[in-house]
Length: 72
Image 1 (cartoon, one colour):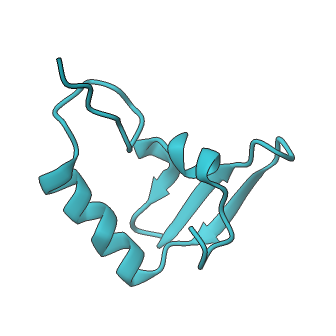
Image 2 (cartoon, rainbow, N blue to C red):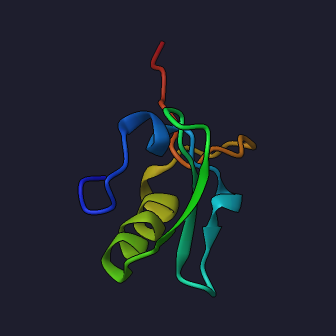
């Protein structure tokens, strides 16, 4: 978040479609300004996101990248 200057809410709202893996960029709809911006998808950040998808993200049909798991 800090390296790209993103707010927590902007990261929270990221969806799979916001990632342009071939173009190495990330589309962010900023909550504060209501503008969509394209940012570079840095290699290390891309690796962390891939690791999250493979090992950390709960199985879900939800389009948002980052989910919160509720325990009951």
